[in-house]
Image (tube, rainbow, N blue to C red):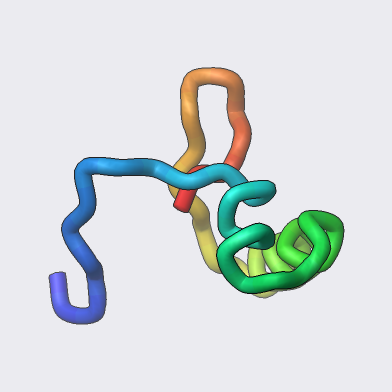
Length: 51
């Protein structure tokens, strides 16, 4: 699919935040907004978003 990046590794919100130099609450806040607008995130077996 166009725009997708193939990766063998999943990252947590905490790891994404660490790599971006922002707080994990900021990642979650924007993810919640995107989900509210219809965007779907990949989720692990526990129902947590993975990137």
